[in-house]
Image 1: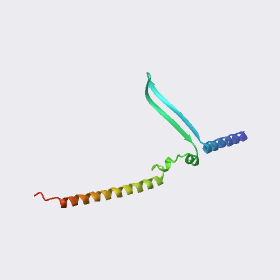
Image 2: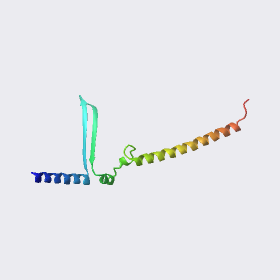
Image 3: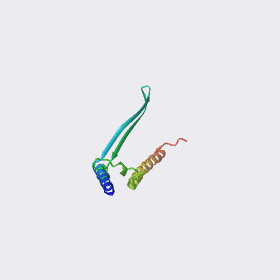
Length: 109
């Protein structure tokens, strides 16, 4: 009996290895309705693949998700710092223009 169990484990490992290597897509839709009126549709898409295979087919969303990747936080922080710098420069330019306009405006008193 132990031999059969070992064969099953080996087979399961082989199947899992192939699934991760090639990838598997499971797709389905669930629709809920009453009297021919659709109330809710749930679209289910499940992909099971190794990280290498997922990247090969262009799926790398987890690398840009700040909850899943520290690199994403670093990228987000840099982007926010750059945006903040640009906004600060624009604010300084607008304040400079406002000061210049006040100096050049005729005194209304």
